[in-house]
Length: 277
Image 1 (cartoon, rainbow, N blue to C red):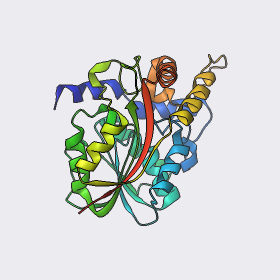
Image 2 (cartoon, helix red, strand yellow):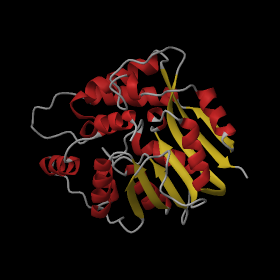
Image 3 (cartoon, rainbow, N blue to C red):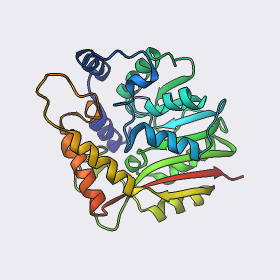
């Protein structure tokens, strides 16, 4: 394992995350039995479940498609694609604790037969050639140093004309970003690249652009709401939001996202690409 990969695991990993989430839900009086019960905390990216639904529609994901979710986290997007779009989803994440938690939540909401999770490296996928109709990633590429290798692997596991949909954070006109951030406490595991460069890498890797759009303004507006909502609790009822995944520094990370977006140190894009022959 590369040194920076262990640093990524250390950054995201939380001991007994599944127990922590269940205990927080119990104290808040929430039972996890349906797909909607986890919506407030299981989509670890800007704009949450709304962004997942939006990208899935743009990518024309539909019933029966076999989809690979890269950097699946605790499985929120994978469950959304299965429950709302009828896809059969395989999730991969470097962080084993995320995969365990994802599997637990998925079983609890009754989606265990259509969503599967595996611990693994996105740049060295444990799947056969041309195995998937679509590949998908949200807010993970900024942790990948060798993006060329990543895109080659994605192309390898996609069938001809297969779709690759991404929702990612890119570098802006100013640098570096202010840390800590949800994906990195410092520069050592943050590998941001510009929008033009990212699109160029995908085309060089054998992908044809279908859609590419900047959604920075919508992202900034959403995160302003997140920051406004992070207030001290006085009733001892835990907040069931992204703080469960970001930990005790959630407020600082969220504020820095807003600051970086306002200062054009980061930008947010959506893209849909097709695998060429």
